[in-house]
Length: 325
Image (cartoon, rainbow, N blue to C red; front, side):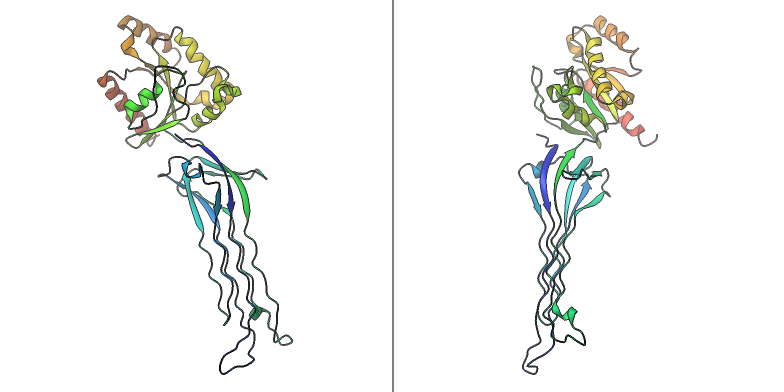
C-alpha cells in the first residue's frame, strides 16, 4: 500500500537555560560568576532521497520532536547543543504548513529545507558580569523551538504512468514489466492506491482506474490525477475487448483537460492491452482507429512473453532518450 499523504506535528528542541553559579572551591570562597550558557535546541530538516518510496514512515508517527539543548553548568561550562534531525522523504514530496500555507517542494536529493529551527540557548550569569555588577544573578532561559503542523503530500515522479479506465489491465501490466506486486483481479477498482515499479532504473507508476468525473473528485479521481502530473510519458491503456474503445480513450482525455490541460500536452503512448482476446482483423482495426490520435500506438498481452519482452525494450529506448533530449 502506497502512503502518499500524512499530517504531522514537527517540533524543534528548546534551547537550554543559562546557569546561575559562582565560583566556589578550596581556594576561592567567594568567586565571581561562572554560570555557563545553555546549548541550542535541535532543528528539523526535510531532505529528498532516492531510496524513500513513499510516506509510510508517517502512517502512524504523527509527531517529530528534536531534542532540547542542555542547560548551562557551573565553571562556565556550556550546555551541549542538541543534534539536528534530518528526515528523508521521497522526491516529489510537498511539505505545507497548515497554518500559513508556506510550502517546500522536494525535487532532488540535494533539496534540503529547514522546517523548524531549534531554540537558542540562554546566557548564563557569567555573560552579565560588569564593573558595576560583579555578582549578577541575571540569566536567560532558553528560547522555545519552533512548532509547525505540516501536511506531507507525495506526487509520484516516474518515467511512465499507466493510465486508463478501470480493468484496462494496468496492474497486471506493471507486474509483467517490473517486480512490483500490486493486487490484480478480473473486476474494476481492484487497485485503490497508486503503485510504483522499476524497469531497470526507470520508475513506472500504476495510476488506479479513472472514471468520468474524476477531475471533479468522483471515485477519488483528483487524488489519483495529481500523480500523473510529474510522469514524463503517459501509457494510455485501452482494453482491446472494450465495446467502445474510442469513447474510453476520450473519457480519460477529457478528465485530463478538465483537471489540468498540461496533462494533455504530455507525450502519450496508446497501449492496446489484452490482445490475446481479439483476432488479427480486430487488432488491425483498433490500431487504425487510434493512429489518428497518437503517432505511438502499441499493442501487448501479458500472456505473450514476446509481447512483454518487446514492450520492455521499447520503453527502455524511450526512457534512455530522456537523457539525450
